[in-house]
Length: 173
Image (cartoon, rainbow, N blue to C red):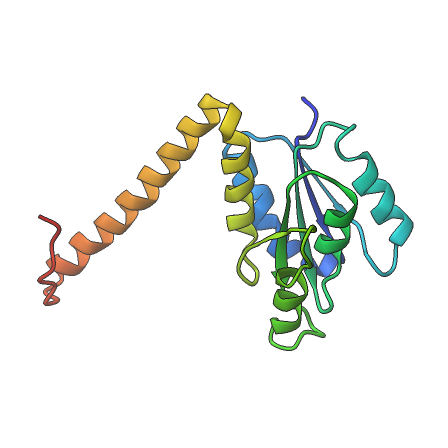
């Protein structure tokens, strides 16, 4: 087993069902990752240690998911120079997820966090793969294949709709 190059962290184990989407897509692309709990509010020293040591441990991207006040991605981004992708999580104490979205999205100048959709951990994994593919042609090829696969899936659904008799007149020339 090689060392992980993506860190997946979350504020609570209740976030794991959402964050598993990032792990699944990274695994699909053959990207080594680690996954653990780092709470901005309950384990602040662990957060600082994780962010400070991430680069020296070989991580290249961090995916951080959090619900509620969702300070985890921004706090990690304030400490490390690695790209941080924030995943707002709709949690039990959430205001329909808006609190999480805005907490991650509204970062001050100088502390960017790439933010995906509410519960969008799969897209966070894809974005991490795209970042890593800049210097990895084999990974870029796997991503290209993935994009072709999802395109084919939609095209198959279009054909299924047409064959079911729906009045689908539009076609790309």
